[in-house]
Length: 291
Ligand SMILES: [Zn+2]
Image (tube, rainbow, N blue to C red; front, side, top):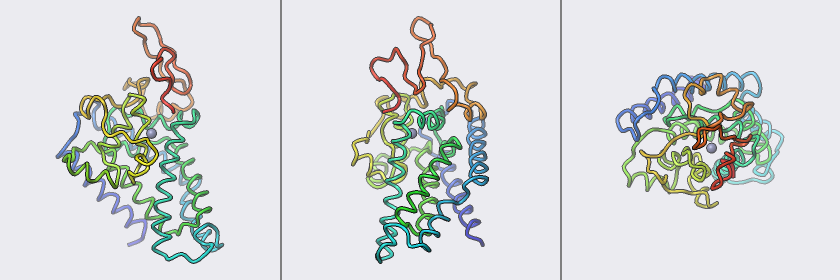
């Protein structure tokens, strides 16, 4: 069996396992029909795969091989024990993805792209596919630069990418883990309950829990929030300005970075203007979705 077939098989197995677990132990009732969302999120995944295949392809692994041959990067400057460079490479890549996520929330033009991911009105494993193709390509360029600077080995890059894909399925899952298991797990990795806080409509909660796999970074850098104020069943998922299902079709999502958010109504029924980074002008308590 080829390496890519094996990776696909492992990914499909994890997908089926998480999907069955969601079905057996759901955390929240669904607001939108499952197949409507799955069709949209899978459609976005298809666009992402095509966009990557016809532009940068497997650029991160290719760069890792090239850096190894050329002796580029921190890990190639001197002989590190292989296990140490592998573990350090993996951990540093995960930290870099955490920092990238914070940047996507902080910089207005990047938030325009990343908010597509936050427009999902429910959260389940398919939300792990809901990324705009521009975010996928920018993230890949960032990873390529990082791999070149560090000289991370191709095997570590492959393992990291596979882990991140599996983690995205798991941490977006609509899955109710026993509280004690969740508490124990989240000392090490991001759990569905921990990541769900990040998908709350409450800006202070949206701007917390940025981690994707290792949970340490949020605790270390002060962005950790244990639970949503309204509870996991009572909390509202998504963004305040993107609550209309009929405005969240596949092609509408692709165009979101280039359009203004939907005008929302204020208490008197008038349109409440929202600026380009998602700030509702009348919202004096919290100035922005970005921080
Ligand atoms: Zn985010």
